[in-house]
Image (cartoon, rainbow, N blue to C red):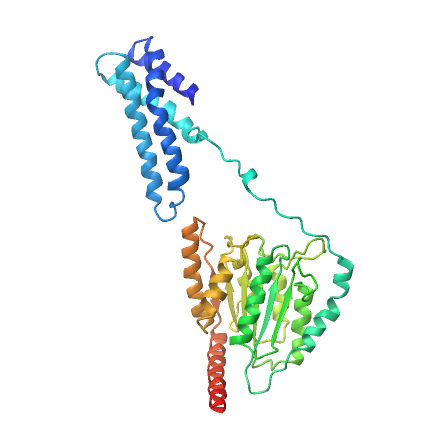
Length: 393
């Protein structure tokens, strides 16, 4: 910045025709400009950017004010260094302003300190090395044990079966969401014994069958013996990181697990015994799975558009943004999945705006026939609850 001011002062002195002013101009200019630049730097970093998402005009007005102040100070410095006021003085002030402000703008020389965020960020703890052979060898018996405990549905009674899938096991937030979703569905939506979870959790690697494509496919195939294919509904809740290729990340420390590409997920669900499906995918870029899942018998909900990330999947978070909005804030109060999505989308948008994030824009695709089945299922639940209350009274 000092070099650009000296260069601008030299050129300004040539414009006004006073060679000695090249020494006076920078002294006068620097004495008046340093304090405003410091103030602007504090304002821009500590105040403006915090409220930028709600009041973007704050940033731009402070930006324009700094330009105007720089021009005024430059004109004053040029005037004080020589007598009179001519168009040459204004031209010299403009040159001095441009040569001072533009380098500062593009090179961020007006920031008088640089925060070393690498020093303030806590290092992520290394995931423990797991006994891969032992864990993988136990998958068959562990999954079969859960499947044997599931209760079959009865003909003529439309039931909903819940499968939770937490793919990224090196962060607790995804396992938290699946555990909450299982409790929620057990209390409000499914019959007891009609929930299954597949979880990758580095803190409890053998607490549930692993969230893998193989286990998901095996579980769905087994359910053919438990369900009424023309009546029952699958609710699949998947939460993990997502790739920009629209795959669902599968990770658990050192275990050799494969991600699930969107196309493969579509094939797994197409081959499942369930005709009616509700699929919720909470992950970055998850909107990219929609073309492989949507049909008239399926309701698809994703946490983001195909080209957008979702938020909240940090080590210190209990739930992701979408997981909290959809599961905790919406489904607990609203039995309609579509209405719960609408409420969750508004909440996520509000939180992202508050935190200055690019909107993730959650997506929904509602098949015409699945909507009819969900209405029928909801009416059946209400009827069963009334009968139960009557008997209890």
